Image 1: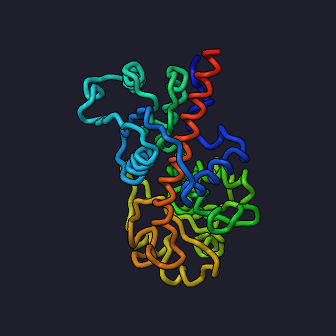
Image 2: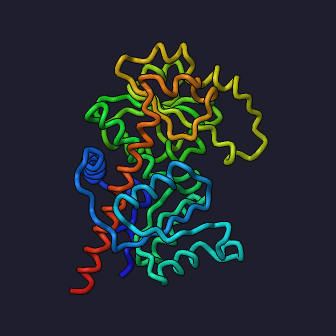
Length: 306
């Protein structure tokens, strides 16, 4: 019996809003000292085909706190370099006994076919310009910690919307949870498929949550003319714009941060910034994701054995 969607964590769109809230609340419980599942009998491999600091290390820390055993995997020394496909790599790891895979890959939607070829949970650590569900969950956790709810909030997502998997995951989830979402940034980088109003940065700073995005240079075609100073002046969070934020507003960024581009360098550590708190929350959000995947896996195995 294939796990298919039950134990996988591929997008937040696959979950009902109540399930998303349950995951957020579990992450908050873990942050406040709730006992975590003991998964010391489980193994996991982290397959990161794109560079990562926060997501990869955050998953590794979450796995460590759940006592999971990580099976080391390095793309540069794997059989991928000999032409092995992603599917064959994943099936090989499953065949030798790995219980779960966390995968980041540059191909948008890489998991669509792969999820039907595996009997073990597949966790999406980010796919191309598609989805970044674990980042979205930690972002939602950070907002819920601050405001207690989503209904009535305005969230402005600012920057390279067209190439951002963070934006894509967050827009859908935030709208379903009751928030109003607007976009900001260069008009050429707007994404009509997101279904949100596009406003200037000076209107965006009136939001309750200002979520800044990194410029995704690696996903552009290489012909983009880009001046960091011009971008900062036209679309970034400057000192002057920070002064216009509401008293209760918070500033977020998925990182890595281009200081002086999306945000003035000194603002990263200012009181309204939740940027490093997001990173802390990422560990607990990913613990909740891993717990759910393993719980579902075990439940499915018990059901199959009956």
